[in-house]
Amino acid sequence: MDKNINFYAEQFATLAWGPWLIVLLIGSGIFFLSYSKFEIFKYLIHAFKILFSRQTNNEEGEVTPFQALTTSLSGTIGLGNIAGVALAISIAGPGSIFWMWITAIIGIATKFFTCTLSVMYREKNQEGQVFGGPMYVIKNGLPRKMLPLAYFFAIAGMIGCLPAFQSNQLIQITGDLAFSDIENFNVYGGLALASITGIVVIGGLKRIAEVASYLVPFMGSIYFGAMLIAIFLNLELVVPAFKLIFIDAFNGTAIAGGTFIGVLIYGVRRGAFSNEAGMGTESLVHGVAKVSNPVKQGLVAMTGPIFDTLIICTATALIILISGVWETSTSQGVTLTSEAFNLLLGDLGGFILFACVICFGLSTIFTYSYYGATCARFIFGSFGMNFYIYLYIIGIFIYSIVPIDIAINIADGAFAMMAIPTLISALWLAPKVMQESRNYFKLINNT
Image 1 (spheres, rainbow, N blue to C red):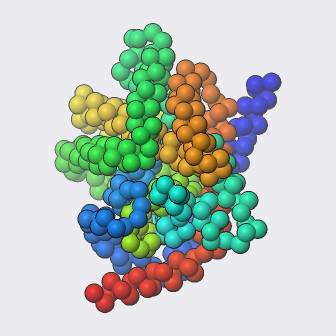
Image 2 (cartoon, one colour):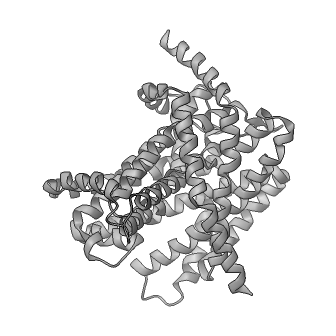
Image 3 (tube, rainbow, N blue to C red):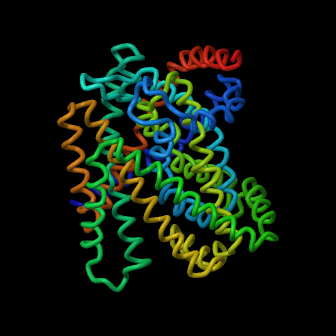
């Protein structure tokens, strides 16, 4: 019976992350780019100024633009950026990284539109708390007949943001890399992980954002700094590594039975999984930022793919390619990345990677709890939000100690389903975003 359920769950996840999703994400991103006439790229510097600007007390919202971005990044910078890049190179070759870059550039436009809308159509409850996300965009921006799409997103979000994969893999990686000699480590590790998560997430978004605003920049700087050291020690190998990425992106020889389409699809898929542009998760937190104009947070949000894909994923790829382990090792995922760090930076490199994996994995779990809880609140109210948090914490321990292939497949499939209502609403309301953007750009250009 379990085998049959797992078979169908696996088929669901495979179908959900199939070519149709790639076409939807990339097609929507290309539309947003062309519809905006690439104008948003002119305001990247302005976006960074907003990111680090001081907020006035009269601006409505829950967190600062910087906290919103770091919280969003804490959900995307994680195992997908470290293990996912290694997996892409080992399966589809170095050329897959090029297509991850293309996905990130397109994702910049997608995040601008989805997150601007999330602020435009957010809601405030009687206690003064602000909530945003695709379900509120659909509820307040689309015709009433489209409301089922909002509930579809919320249901998919509650399931898709469960910590099945993150909890299971984080405990497994920690045990394999540091505590392999401890019997039943998954039990002790699961309890510790659930406890740490509980301390942070029960405090709500503001506590999650505070943790993320320190943890993400700190660990991101360490990770990127380690890459720079490795590059400095192997300067002569950097240009060949980039050349390999560009050449392999179009010949597809690295993939088994090599095809250009195979490299392209796998690279785009890993890129979409890396920055989550169009999935709707990022707009759940960007939608509650303290900003005076929705476009301001849309501009901040569009810097996300620059950090998580163009910087962190590129850093990981260069480490793997420079080290050469992708050609000599049979390992995949985080183990391959670990071998590259150890080879280039010795034991210190292995320790840095281990610390980053732990911190990025934790921050992802923290952020996903808010995503799922916000979706639960939309359907069940405040009680449902609190109930979901406690179930989430209990689930962390359960996912750490039992085989959960079925749960992981269902969660992965549900996560992909979130893209449907997110992008339908964003495409529908794109003219509203451009109208708001033109007004804002005109305002700042005249000051």
